[in-house]
Image (cartoon, rainbow, N blue to C red):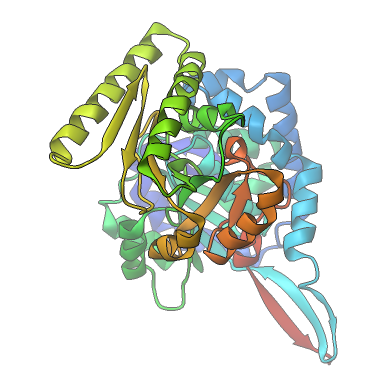
Length: 419
């Protein structure tokens, strides 16, 4: 399906839409700019409909299970107050008088968003960031979007018809490189949320002069300098709730320990906590059966893939822990299965530098007197977010994204000399 002109269209309209898209873009950009207040008012109205339950039927129809709960978690970050504060934080001070005249913040123009599919609502969210900065947005939907983004765009443009010329969406596979290249040729900036392969492919598709804005895959982990007597439930709930699917999901639990025996003790202590979190999360027989099947598949894969390894496996109910001897940060198996490794603090810099440029969140659990030292050490290693383990995937007002303020990447500064 396609979204264009404020309407949801069938795939058969792809070529006609592409054929006149440049003309439509020129017409829109030749008119008055998109006012920030127009966008904020529309998003505020959409938020009120979400709060009232008016969008529940759309969420049930188009979003995966659990999407309503996730939306409630991020709802404060998309309130008018939060968005206004974010605009001031990220763009404030970029415009104003200068010794030569003045500087003004302007949108890049046209953004092509190659949207991610690992969280419901992200394709719509990346387009919202484009709207907040006044850009016209072309969104390539991820596989499995299920129509949620199209429904959100339609609702948003019904609430504010002036947004219709600034929102397009295309449900097409990345294999259609010709169509993607045609969209990239229309863009002033390409926003990609994919992995290394997707980023490399877009480098080849984007024309010279088109700004490539990468939000690539990132790796996150928990770091525990102590765990005796400390509450591990937040970490367990995070591991189960995110399923390892997000850039902020804990992939490895690193322990400030020299001896394997200490790590074994941790696994035995943590596994019941993880099982309790799984039991709380998988509430229906179907969910529990699916999680149990995945945990079993994970165990079998490890037997085959790492035959003869010295891994120690701790299988649990709908979850598992795998203790490995190395200190590498790597992806865990998904859905409640997580790796555990030793990483003495003296080895933090050397171990994490192997993934420099890919580090995102560290969930730090330690006694209060150690927090300042370990926070500074993790920051020097290249980590961009340091939270408590239970809040690794939470969003916070005013936080950066992978160490940068996104809205600044979607604008340009125009310097104007006095006449």
